[in-house]
Image (cartoon, rainbow, N blue to C red):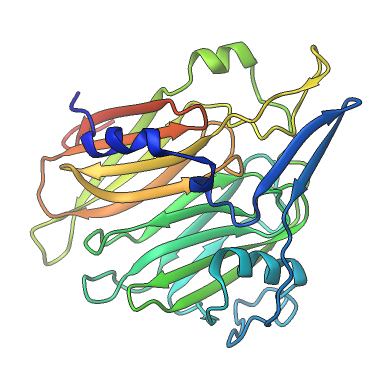
Length: 308
C-alpha cells in the first residue's frame, strides 16, 4: 500500500496540545484506589453573544455556565448564531448505552467551493473532555452526512458548531440523558482488543450525482481500538486502565484529503465513522489512516470501485 508521506513526516511532531480537547485533562492520578481527574476551568468574562436557539430542545435553557466555559476555551469570544438552517443534529433523548451514543450531523445546504462548512465541532458539555471531535473539510468534498458514536459521562447538552469558510459560527443542540459512558468497562476481552488494534472494517457505497458526471461515495468504517479513557476500572488488577485512544483520523481520495478528525477518548470503543463526499473522478483510491496516543499509525487503502 502507498504510504502517506506528508503525514509520516509530521507524526513525530505530535504533542499533547494537538488533542485540543478545549477543557484539557491536566492530571489523572491514582490515590488510594480512587481516580482524581483535574481539568482547567477558566472563567468567562463575556456571555455568549448573538445566539438564538431555535432547535426546539429546551429553548432558552441550553446556554449554561459549563458551556460558556467550554466555548471560551475552544472558540474564544466569537459570535455564535442559530444553525438550524445550516445543519441538523440527531442524538437520542435517552441513550440505550452511554458508552455508545449515536450522533449524526447533516449539512442542510449544498457544500460548494464558494460556501461550505470548513470546520465542524462536536461537543458534549459535561464530559471530562467536552470537545468530542473537530472535523475539518476542504472546499471540494460536497459532504452531506456525518455520523459517529460518542461516550456520555452524565446528562448533558450535545452541540454541533459549524464554522463556514466565511468564518461565521452556527450551532445546534440536543439534550441527551445518559451517564457513566466514560467509565464503562470495555465490551470484550482486553487482551483480544489490544491484539486487534488498528484493524479496519469498511462498507463502501456509491451512486451517481444527479446532473453531474460525478459520484457520491459513502463510507462506513470502524477502527479496532479500545479507546480507553483512563477512568475505567480493571476488576482483576484493581487498578485503573491507563488512557489509550485514537486522536487523529483522516480520509483521502486519490491522495487528496476529504476529512481530518482530531478527537480523544470521548469517541466510543472501536471508533466508527460514516461519511460521504463527492468524487470528482471515479475509480480512485481511498486511504484511511489513524494515529493513537502511543503514536502508532494505522492505515489502509481501498479501491472506490470495490463493493464491500
